[in-house]
Length: 201
Image (cartoon, rainbow, N blue to C red):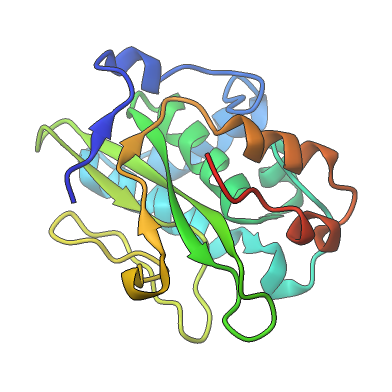
């Protein structure tokens, strides 16, 4: 799939914000810990990705009750849904000077129980040595989900099933989608969050 940049200015994919709050001391510290003694750009990205994928739980997988949104909240609580985890991954990488954006897919939430379309959040990362963007999905693996970091081909959490109306959104956004942020902030429980996931960008 041909990815489309929302903006050609790479600096826009490095900014700190209220959500991607890498000025937070805990974000700075985890970035330092994960990147120290690694000189290779790709290995740094791989290490950060694996940390967010494997050490921060997807709330649905652990029956979590805490809704997180800002990167620092996700790191503190060690849980979040796909959107929240993408915020943390972006914050850590941006703090290390690695341009990172946000991508979305339209997927069916659950074929059997909740067969409606929702947005799924993931990241795009610019690898300077390759001069290209790659997409990664730090949602977290479980039975039937086996996402991984790869510079050669995408290994995302979910295949897009076009026959069911699912689709990839090709744009790499510099900021998290406003509807995503709003529902994360408004929802008091994970159950409420899943009942109100955005369906459109």
